[in-house]
Structures are given as C-alpha cells and as structure tokens.
Image (tube, rainbow, N blue to C red; front, side):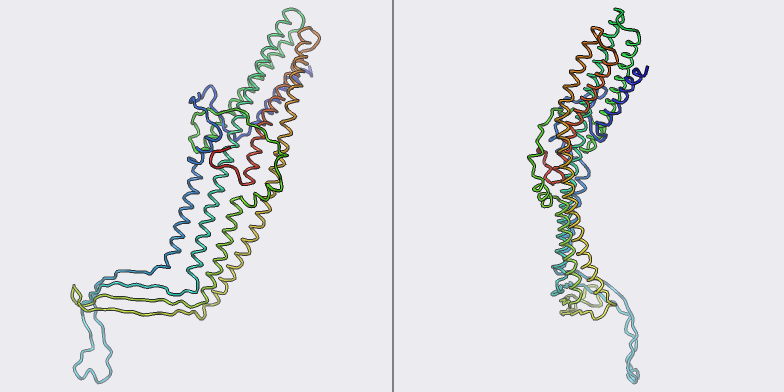
Length: 453
C-alpha cells in the first residue's frame, strides 16, 4: 500500500515540476482550441513586431521628441523678440501745475482725449554672462538622456520578447513531453490488462496503471493551460492583442560554451555600452551646465531695445513714435538666493557623479550574475542529456522485466515517472539556457534591437 501511494503521488509531483519548469511570463502558441494562423513566427520577427507595436517604445520615442522641442525652446533666447503693438485708449488726467500758472488760464485737466497707437517693438539680449549658452547645453544633455532612456526601453522590450518567446517554446515542449508520458502510461495500462487477463498480475496493477493515465491527463491539461497563458504573454510583449493567434518556430538554437566569453571584457563592454551608463553621463553634463547657469546670475545682463510706430488721437495715427536704447541689469542683493542656487547646482553634480559610479558597479555585478547563471544553465543542459538516456534505459529494462513477470508495476511506473521528470528537466534546461544567454547580452548592453540574433 505505501508503494502505491508513492507512485500515485509522483505524478502529482511531476505536475508541480512541470509548472515550475515553464516560466509564467512565457508566451505560447495556440493549442487545439486556438488554431494557428498558418504562419510561423520566429524570434527575430517577434522582436521586430515588438519594436514596432509595443506602446512603451512609442512612449520613449515621444520622450525624445519632447526633449528636442525643449532644445529648441532653450535656443529661442538667442534670437530677438519682435512684436506688433496696437491699441486704443481714452483718458483724462489731472495736471498738477506750479502755483500761479493756473491764474494764467491754463486748465489743470488734460482730456478727455483719444489715444490711438500702433507699431513694432523688438528686444534682444546682447550679453547675459553665459546664461543662455548654459541652458542650451543643459537642454541638449537632457535630450541625450531621453535618447539613452529610449535605447534602454528598446533593450528591455527585446529581453521581454526573448523571455516570453523561449518560455512559450518551453511550454510547448513540456506539453509534448507530457503527451509522450500519457502515451506511455496508456501503453502500460494495456500491458497491465493483458497481464491480468493472463493471470500473471493482480487487478491492483490495472487500477494503478489507470491512476497513472488519469494523472497524466491532468498534467497535460495544466500544461495546455500554461500554453494559453503564455501565448497571451508573448502577444503582450509584442504589443499585440492578447488573444491574437500565432504559431512559433520551436527549433532548438545552438548552444555556445560560456568558456568562450571573456568575463572581464564583458564587464568593461557593459560599462561602455549600457544605455543607463550613457544616460547617467548625460545627466552629469546637464547638472554641470546647471552650475554654469547658476553662476551667470552673478553677472550683468545687457539688453537692446527698439520701437517704432505711430500715435495720435485719430483712428489712423500720423505722429511718429520711436525709441532706441540699451539697458544694464546688475543684481546687487537678493537675499542670498543666487548663492544657494549655485550651491544646490554643485551638489546636484556631486549627486549625479555618485549615482553614476554606483550604477557602474551595479552593471558589473549584473554581468557577473548573468554569466554565472549562463554557466550553470549550460552545465545543466549537458547533464540532462545523460539523465534522459539513463532514464530511457531504466524504463526499457523495467518494461521488459514486467512483461516476463520478473518486475513489479511499481518498478515500471517509477521508471516512467523518472523518465518524464528527466525529459521535463531537459526541456526546461535547454530554454533556461537561451533565456540566460539573452539576459547576459542585455546586461552587457549588446542585445540586438533590430531583430537580428
């Protein structure tokens, strides 16, 4: 009785194992209930679709457009302001005359009178102690930040597609393993019935074989559910409606030995290529320009002004009205506001530099971890091949022994469970390696964003 319970529970344990092998975020192709469109989708095509359809990529592109417009806005002060002025007013004003003049009959009220005026006015900053240039450089640096952030978003999207795609393939291959396990369980059930009819085994062998078939069917249903869930994940990663039907290429990709990768070169390359690092450098540049802008507040500003127009009491004014001049602004005291702004700008530079140094350390650590996981997954793939071969041979021997009455149903079903578990482990290891390879490339910063492998 204890052996019967152990064998039954092994199928339940296998179901849990299979669920754990399939990444929950992996996208899946449709199963029998969701027929494919007839077109096979490969990984490169999925990446191209994602970069075209994923809303995150479009949002990042709009962020670049916003930053470009900010650069144009920062460049505007280098041009003069030009405006057209026109207006009308009716006014009356009291004139405060010196004592004695009123006795001469000069009225003390002026108006009421009409005042029509029109003309052009322009102003231009001739010198601002470097403020405009500093603000322009800061805006250009922020544009660089937006571009690097967009590059980061694209690489994140590509990585998400890789994970979802390989997760889908793992789910499909896992379902195939479970289907094969179900077929073997049905063969064992037929064998047990034949042995029972021949009087070689008791009825309990048939019952146990029936339990194994039922458990295999339950596991298959769960695997098919994971396929449907994962298919939605891949569609979402590509920016498509979750219910879109698709069929994917499940061919196993070549495995590259991690020993061929120089870890030191990979870490140095990551510090050079990662968009996050370059964005941090642009933030430092923007902060330094902020320091220059804060310093400019201590200097004078020279502006030129000109105006030309007409002014009169009639609708079409005839009297010319013009002005040309220069103005000089030099702040003397503002409650130490400029001093605090400058100190704040310098502190922001120091903060950005510290964040950049910390980010470089984090990037190197990410490469280290990704490389370690790739090495581990490669070793697991190599070991699972031998594990599957041994499990296949064990099942073959147990099957032969049971046919001739030298073995028990427990030995046969235990061998079947071991083979199913070994095959599921191999499937998970193969596609875990592909995901680990994509994660390493993302950590280095050279994960392709153009759909190429």
